[in-house]
View 1 (cartoon, helix red, strand yellow):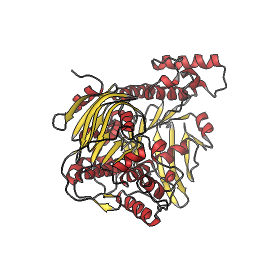
View 2 (tube, one colour):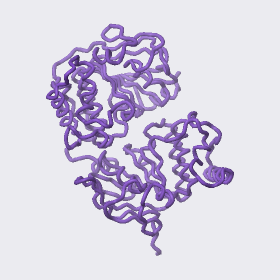
View 3 (spheres, one colour):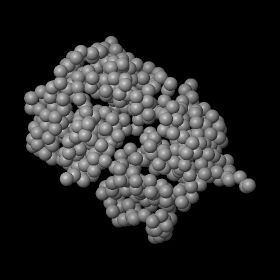
View 4 (cartoon, helix red, strand yellow):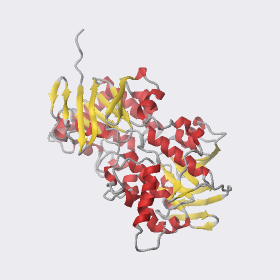
Length: 506
């Protein structure tokens, strides 16, 4: 039988930064029409490997073959010429350009020829795409489709999807999976990077597990279970997410520099009455001490806009926000932090971190709002940063390391530490596990549960409905800018939650 020549073969790739090994002898094979899932914890080496394929980094050693021929990927343009295209997690389109203009930009052929080729591709794939729509009218899923068309028009045969469903609704995920199936039938090879293990079993044909820069297991997806993947993903001392409920109270949380252990009685902390702002209207809800209120909904339902208005980041129109019965509607963010509320933003890169500053500075950034002294207490800063680095198992060389050099999951842990450093009584968590691997997700779940046990009130916003169901004591569902259903943990089901989130309520 004639041996099948792989579309792409990565053999014995090594890569280090300074004295830190990131990839250690990685071997991966991608055939035509395959979807190869590459999974691993933050810092496992996934992004570095893909950047090598894109020509952004150069491997220290090892070889890469495309269609059986050895190649040296010099830069992104060279990788693109060889048929490799990255569909980024956050699509990068020009909002005021049309779909067609975004796709053909930077190409040298005549506009008429490119438009003809583009229409052929769209027809061949059976997709419905309006080329005259402006990019700023597109959903995230539609923007990803534009990115895919960019790659296909440039003759890409290898597509890299980096966390493609992190901002998609349930229906958009199904659409993306259908698009990927179409691409498989056209002989396109796909790398699929995700932290959502269920997606691996839905869409992948092969899976490779990266841990500390080494492939720990690989093979046909049919040979794996979710438990086997998790075992390969997390450290031996880490616990599975499914075991979190049995761990309550075993792992104390330190807020600021104190361990919080005292018993607290349940009382109403936050009350919102007929609250209306930009992107939401007539919101009514309460958040109690020692409880997690899950705020569910699809993209565009108004959840983040509501959170930002509570936190003083956006203007309000009408209604009231009461904290312990006191009206705090429209107060500045600095005042709201002093009153005992803090907020973990959805986009850590845009609103959560100071990328060019150290881990220590980031962990202490929120405390500046509650400390009236002009002289910064360096000893206290170090105590706070050391506490959260240790308790959150943040992988750093030291507290002065620049936060932008950390993996996404470790950056997220720093942001959570920054939020908790002000000892808030109410914590708003907006997509707290977005882009976080299974091991880090387990850590974050444990932190949230312990905060609840310590009497903190938590408003949990998540597009991951399973996460909402696992963690929440009560659930409010938003659709079209308002809350449409309320549930307790006992009466909620995934079907009910999904129907309410899509507006299917009686």
